[in-house]
Image (cartoon, rainbow, N blue to C red; front, side, top):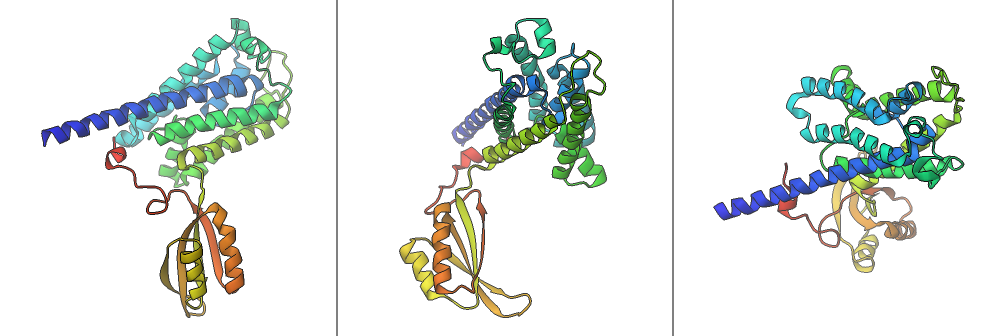
Length: 332
C-alpha cells in the first residue's frame, strides 16, 4: 500500500513539475511575442500588456513589462481578497514572471537605453527582424506566438491575470458573463490605444500619431491570438459530431454506416416538438473527411432527413483516441 502511495506521489510530483515548466515556457512565448512583434509597432492587443504599450507611449522611460507589474499587482491583490483560495497560486506565478521576462528580453534585444525607450524596430536585434513595412505579418506572428503561450498557460490550470481578473470581478458583482467581461476590458484597452497612439492624444514628445489603422491591426492580432489559444487548449477539431433525425428507421443508412464506413452509431428515440410525431435520431461521430460522404448518402436515401453537424473536440473509445491513463488526470 505504501509503495503504491509513493508511486502515486512521484507521479503527482512529475505532473506538477511538467506543468510548471509548461507555464514558464508559455510565459516566455508571450514575452517573446510582445517584445519582437507587438511592442515595437504599437499594436495594442488588449489586456494589461496592451494597456502597458499605450502607457509606454505617454511615459517612454517606463517599460511595458514594468507597467504590467504596476497594474497586475493591484489586480492580483484584489483577486486574492475577493476570491481567496479560488484564485490559484499558478496564476500568481504566471502573472509575476511574464512582465519580468518581457523586461529581460527587451533589455537584451535593444543595444542602448535610448533604443529601449523608443522601441525602434530598426534597432531591435540590429534591425534583423524589422517588420515596419509588414504590419500584417507582425500581427499574425505576434498573435500566433502569444496565443500559443497563453494556451500552454491555460492548459496548465493558470492564467496570466490582467483582464481575466477584471472579467471575474464583473461576473461576480454585475453578473456579466466571463467571456463578455474579457471583451469589454479588451475593447476599452484597444480604444485607449486608438486615442493615444492612433490620434496622438497625450503624447508630448513630438512623435507622430500612428493613425486609426493601427487599431484594426490590433483587432487582427486579438483574433489570431484567440483562435490559437482555442487550438492549443482544445486541439484541432478533426472529428465531427452528427445528429441525423428522420421520421422512420432507415435500414439503408444503417447498412451504409456500419458496412461501408465501418462506423458505429447510436439510435436515440425522439419526437417532434411541433408535430409530436415519433422520430428516430442517429448519434454518429465521423472524421472531417467523412462528413461529405454521409451528406451525399443521406441525399440519395432520404433528402427529408434533418442533419446537424458540429465539432467533436475530444473523442475517446474504439476507433478513436484511447482514454488517458488514470495517473495523467490527477488534480494538483
